[in-house]
Image 1 (cartoon, protein in one colour):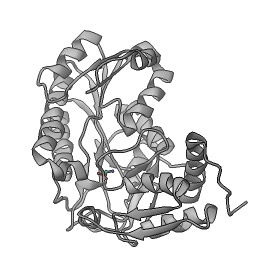
Image 2: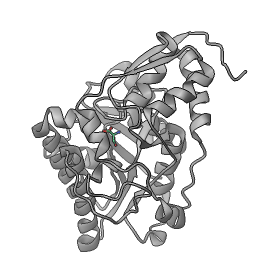
Image 3: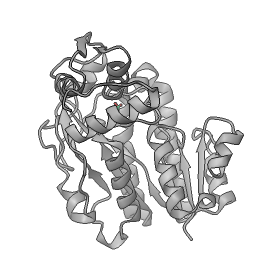
Image 4: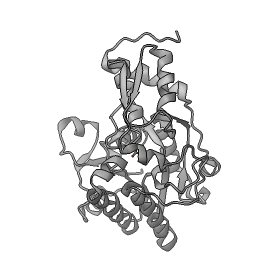
Length: 321
Ligand code: SER
């Protein structure tokens, strides 16, 4: 039976990914860890312990204690938080990964750590960006992701560590809110559209970025985690679903909430968005482990509005009905 340890299990992706892994591999076999202290509610969902990834022995100690086979290392500061506190981003994203990959080597673990479209930079070709291209990010978040990718590949080629990574686009979900990212607007906008019918966006109307709905993010992550190692020629993969700008998502929401209005007040995050691709090519993921997203932009918008309206107990009249 596979046993899995996850760092960052209380984050936007971790929360939903750990629930899926517990359904698949058994509640007792998937150990969640994050900065929060354990409580009854968390422990009810499955084994959980507090773990700070910047503590150099913490990951290895937990790996040994729970006798795990796979490490899903999700703990990370996102792009905007990283720019606000680069030193902390280096500690969490860079040092944290070094401790994780070292534990993977020592205990012979499969390790999956997310990368991001933010690993690309302003000199990267922005349309249909391939897996291998110019990578000179200008954020500490992007720098940390390039480092993670290269160090993971190095551990793989030098010591045979089974390292795997996906470059996520912006992830949109109706569960836990993302925190400290540039693509967070694409989640916030739904809450504000339902609650206030107005939203002030911190990006410009035409800031197009690659995005993905959480069910596809979970599906892809699980597919890569479970993929037969023999089929993997690469270790790091772009994954794509759709791209949109703030103007385009606002128009899509207006189909359902016609009196919704968006205004724009771009801040430093606009510069970050401008440094990233507008669309990603994911041909390697499709070829090597059968990646294929299910959700289109309009399907995602419809589902988000439905789920959030239920969560917020707000009734809304869909203009498309
Ligand atoms: N969602 C991330 C961010 O905005 C990018 O991968 O920081």
